[in-house]
Length: 143
Image 1: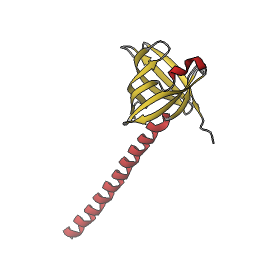
Image 2: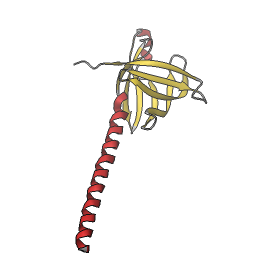
Image 3: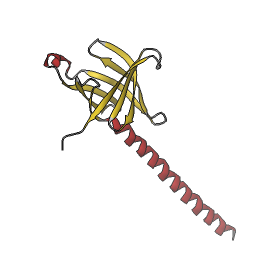
Image 4: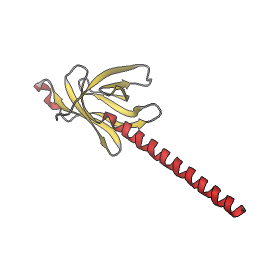
């Protein structure tokens, strides 16, 4: 009888462990999918440039791929976002750098999706609450 109880307990324990494993694997996969939500092309707030955000060496980066004014062609391929990591708790991409090629300024930054088509890009010096913010619009890929 004792042997049967141990077998039942072991089966229950094993089943619980499998359920937990699937749950944690699912949560990790979901967080990875959410992290990729900013990958793609974005139009800057004033419509002066398009930025491609992609993953490089596990970090999120963004470079200028189009400029409205042909006189600004020198800015093409300029890295304007670098070193961002996704934080699943805050649902932000943080610990990165934002570069403003118009003025040559670099700042600490974070990124946050306001909705699937709007990216909040924030640059700040020293304190997050003293910052400059732009809202970028997702560009739908051509079919």
